[in-house]
Image 1 (tube, protein in one colour):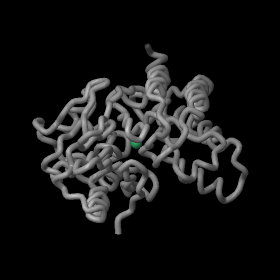
Image 2: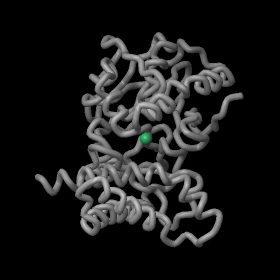
Image 3: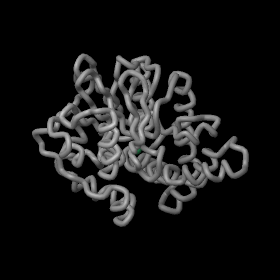
Length: 312
Ligand SMILES: [Zn+2]
């Protein structure tokens, strides 16, 4: 059976079955007889996408666009496999991401460097190259129409330089990829939700703040987070989010992560900050377990950023 939830305005949130349920999503937008798919998950996610489409009565030939927000593999790893299924579709991608979709070798190398070979294969499986003629590059503020519905592409560096977000006026929503951070269901425990995500190697605090401003300039009522699901009233979270970015920078300056040992000290400090204000107990322990991978990746990304910043 397919695992998805129906949101408003022809939008469906499909579980990518990445690591565990509720961690990564794929969005399907339907307008009349046309469909766009935002995010692809990995090649392992395709089965649930196809099952969801079958339940919704959507034919493969209706998919007009496949749109990864950026080329990190929990977002774009399944793009090649998806494009083989949806022969009528174009892949819409950020200008800095396009070459990685037509020749994924460097992307694979970079991800293996972060995760190691065994974990890479378990998480991402096989990455297919996509023929160049099926790739459409979306520049900042380009529009693509899905039947009568306009999708606006917004260049949003900060998490990664190859990241765009997609504004959908019909639902007053923005598909934010990882630009507006993470909010798993369990994160409702946290007094301050929406945790910025900054894995290696392109975290850029000023660019991220500017990208948040740009997203909010569209005055969205809701965000569609890849990690995970619909998030309402984002305006109320902007101050908190920017405070997190400041805190990330302060944590770096305090721990001065000069090397891998420094990254580990930073990871511990970051975990303490994430857990701050949550009462001790089983729920807190489970939450710490859930956040472990993101906190580790964030610490690695912050360490990388701090060393680059220090060395000019
Ligand atoms: Zn992600």
